[in-house]
Image (cartoon, rainbow over all chains, first blue to last red; front, side, top):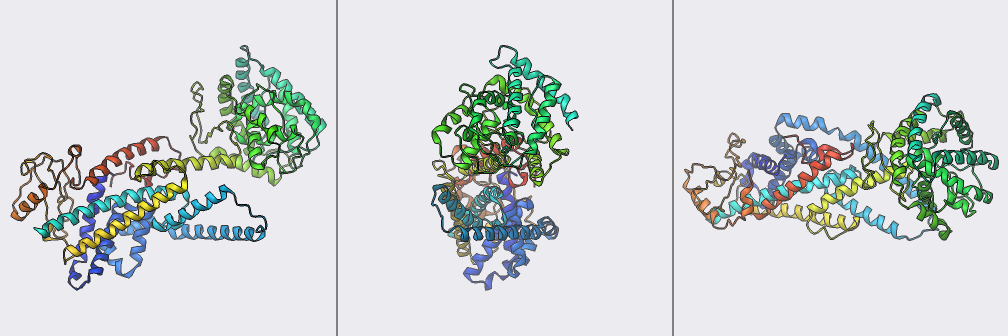
Length: 185
Length: 455
């Protein structure tokens, strides 16, 4: 998927989404409008990426669960595509497995901690590990759907997410510039 | 089990012998004899032997004739029976070390096969130092390698691994060990190692898969499982240590991870290393993506930069959406923003090519036909005077750098970032293609926007 084709897709879907909520535009406040614009952009970005990446699926699934964005998702995706998304997700079971493993791991670690509090050695490696862990947590909170990813897939998803974010920023900036110039003229 | 392995063994043993026969310092025969002697002495002198925790496979060292082989096999089975017992170091063994050194050299070919070795692994160091191997249950006895026998072997590798894992106290004693193990591998040995390795791989898997020694405890079976897992994971990970002269062995779905010199060959650590290498590969991509990440080494710092970058991008999205909301009272950018492709004729300046996409008016218009990001030189009819005016306003500020001119199907060239992004992406995608070609099977192709699937 070339960058420009991605941008095309994004723009197309974004405009589609914008139009679908354009009917209510007059009653919306500034914040509501901004949120609608942002939401459409995010969903458009995720759907332009297709169901291939976990973050895109996470964005779409979380948006379709929320009442205010459900309609938007359906409009942007179109019915068949939405069905595809739902089919390709299948994450609830994986998520549960992942979360339960995580809980087990955490409990084991806690038990060990309680036992070995006496001899706690502050080593450079452990400090480094903790640093990396903390940052990984932050990154997981940033990338949509990142909570249930392991280290390696997190990095791949981040890679893809960064590229898509850049494309989104580019598209939005172009549109913003164009409409600004239009307005000023 | 052994019978099937035997002919293969013999065959593979021929080659090292042939190679060795060409004026080698140590003939394979000598080595094998030393092995046999050592093994026999092992049995006599020790009641317990340390074996590595990770795998215990039937290690079939090369022998020239079937009889010796049989003896060895018998020895091995008896050794295997001693797997679970702990062993105490016996300084009396020190005399045997030179022989053992020769023994270890033959195991060069198994560098990648942590499994087979760790089982029979003897830890030269701790024994040589007379250290008690009470630290771990599966610590192989130590040995001192004779100097100059700088052959990389899994024994040495496992030794080094033990060193790392257990943090020996006798550092000076270890150093000769380490230096020996980190000597350059003998290339000749490497060559036959390569051949042997592939064959032994299959042997080992057949050996491990079939029922191994009668005293299969759960310990053993775990080791076998690990061996299988090790064999079944794909990684073409290794690097400059690959011997280019080595014949290309047809590899089944195995992962051949070459243990680099001085590194552990335990299956766990091998898997760890594979995983770490994958992660570091991806981090390299991210380094290229995230501006300012080139100077930073170290995972935490790079993660910091990545986090900052993602946050800044997200903030930019927020800001732009606010801007868009402020710019016009209506959300749907309908009538005002109808742009068509611009022609080179309208704008005499060659670098004022703003290819702006059309934002569809209604849903029927918002189809791909309207969004045409075509090559720069296409002509479009402009009937809307407003659009003309708009384009003229665009032309002035559009100082597009010359290199973007070459971009086909460029989205828009007004913001410089677009073109650079495409340049970056092209480079990245190329890397991605290359990477996909030789990356491990574990790489999920979908995660990369590069892949050949077209939307």
